[in-house]
Image 1 (cartoon, one colour):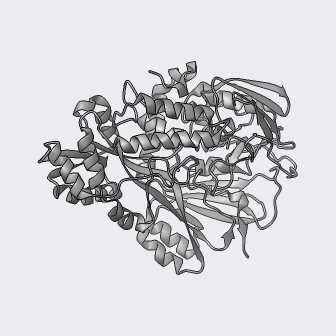
Image 2 (tube, rainbow, N blue to C red):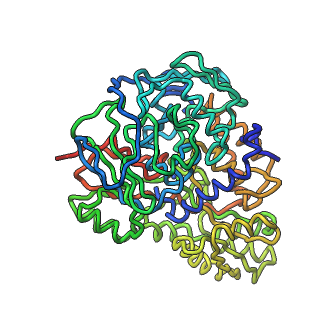
Image 3 (cartoon, helix red, strand yellow):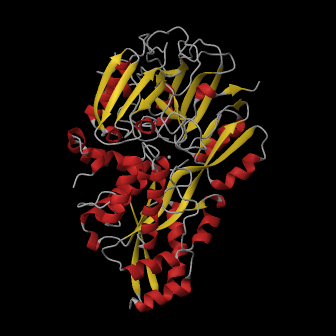
Length: 560
């Protein structure tokens, strides 16, 4: 069965490749312990998003220059100590931490600008938009006076051609554009999308992947051109130099429509610093201004430094353990859920800053249910269930990513709990590739518990619920092999109305999570935290969980 989300011809054709791209996203997300991963423009009627910015004159085309060549522009230099390389700078296919660069080079029609409201969409390249009653037709009006880095004006045709490039490639997160049946350019500033099914398109177009608008002159270029360090968008910065093994340097685009002041950031060095100890030292010394992914035990010390700000927030990332519904009976699954050391885990991991998960949808995502009833640790009841099932001496395999300290620690603490009720937890550390291959090969011979992180491609509960629990004939990411037609119908209906009735959709998503909890489909462990570190001589950065570890350099201001 091809899921409804990817029923278009291009989606079916590229489904296998898309899954491989998602796997890449997950592997990177797991490696970093996941860092931190409305239907209308400010009202329930998809009215308009107000803008009042005056565009500046256009600059010359973006070019590539040596990394050590500093552009002759006024303003501050900002050094971002980045722990990971950038595998793909093609804005149509990049699907991991390249968003930290791409969000500053390119722009999207809409954006989730409020970290506290994961459903409130604001305009970026679009100044207003409307949709019909069933959210199958959306019309966007573009901001006036925007130019690309090569000096050409932003037009509706450029928007269409950029999104069509992504659709045609079918890579990265292109599957989120699957509802689009057609794109009609009415005039220079107006584009209408006709969708195959109801979709909150303004939310989709706020994604941190695959919805960037590219210069018409660059649409025909391949990934090699982009990955050589070339870029051409409407964003506030261009690439000044690119060394994949060292640094990528960004320079301000003087013709940016938002204009510039002298206390903004003129150049940015995205410096590859893989050693967290070195990254910490660079920030302490002032040789770098921002980093993340440091050990949690250093943050308290960093907070004592008045020159450094530690920014703590919840991400949109959930950690959970899928339970093998083919191998484990409902009684055994319930026993496993009740034996899990929820309080111990939340208190000991991530510096005690993680939050007990309320289902799979993180509390930072619209449609989450903070008051959802969730089970507590109850070893007496768990022991009764094991005895009732005649499962004394049972061995349960716990599959986790080799080298991931948090997942291993979880397994060790859980193993101690399970030993008290006559169950042995066998820890099985494997690479992601090996785990995924084994889990897909034969559910009846696969692991009993598959631990995994998930964060949204675009911000919707459907991404969490569909990807990991919707019925599948062949397992992709539903690696607990869960199947429930009533659950499927609930989340599909919720997705279909999320573009027209967000409250009703949220209620259906809540009911779907209640089913998962009642049927013990998974152990819902943690919403993981995000902690970022920035030098105090810069202000203006507000962590936004919809855009993992992205710093919008244009919004920074120097304090001196």
